[in-house]
Amino acid sequence: MTPVSSTCPDQAPALEILRRAGFDVPFFSYDYLLHGGTRDAAAKLGIDEHCIVKSLVFDNGKQGAELQAVMVLMHGDKRVSMHKLQRAAGIKRLMPSSPETALALTGYRPGGICPFGLKTNLPVFMQETLTTLPILYINAGQRGVVAAIPQESLQLVRPVAADLVSEGA
Image (cartoon, rainbow, N blue to C red):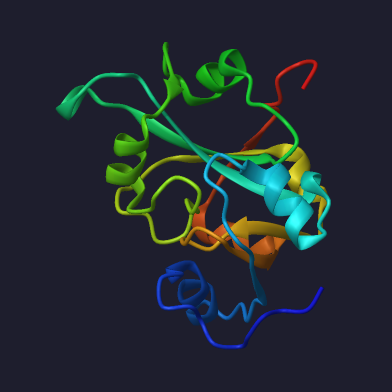
């Protein structure tokens, strides 16, 4: 697999954020398929789905000042345990955010969400086993663009590592 270019796509802000922080990361483009998820991206890019990181947004379903939301970074082939996430976040009830809420909170459309350059200050949680992978493949803020990042670059978003995998996932 070869990076497609050394120049940032115009709509992939995470690449520029990472580069400004000293991480010169390669990126890969693929034909994005709506609802294709990490399985489709992995197949098109020839990457193990376990090494692709999903950036997921969850909220408590409330509006305005009562809205509480978090981001979770999870292996592409795993599911988030809501019980474990609620306990780790200290929020009684969380659910996947609607596409509209996710866009409003992150500034990114679902399918291109990443933890870098978020529109709001979301707490970021990550599956603890992501720290065992030297390179992670993560959306770059644009659908169909994935960055290959060193695991230590996640420290830019100060994630809280925890066991968040759903049993049987």
